[in-house]
Image 1 (cartoon, one colour):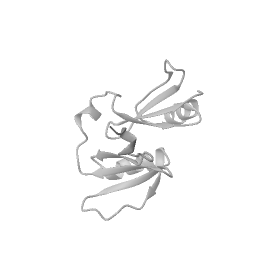
Image 2 (cartoon, helix red, strand yellow; image 1 turned 90 degrees about the horizontal axis):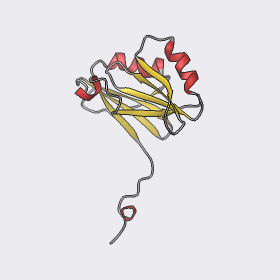
Image 3 (tube, rainbow, N blue to C red; image 1 turned 90 degrees about the vertical axis):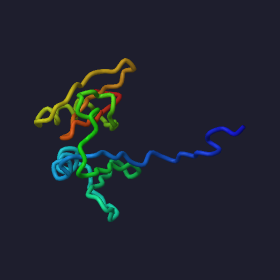
Image 4 (spheres, rainbow, N blue to C red; image 1 turned 180 degrees about the horizontal axis):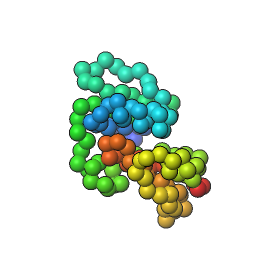
Length: 131
């Protein structure tokens, strides 16, 4: 019997898609608070916007949908994480803005983390080896 990698050869992580209720507000958050670059998007039959997280990873926003209840429940279990050089630097920046955030705090494995909530209630984790 063949192993999984014989059939599914994952090359990289490609993108995260999120439903958003207000596309303009979400675009402003990701473009002007987190400084993600807006990139071209195919001409789908629904509104949305794409952003580059890294040259290999994208964020896809899909407009006109209410985010899933888990996003609004306050739970951080459903989130995506971004590795940064310094969680403390992110914390200093985020604390000067009017957004809900938690941390920074150290995980049991020594990594530092800070959670930031976007306009639709999704959590974004920032993590680094140093604070």
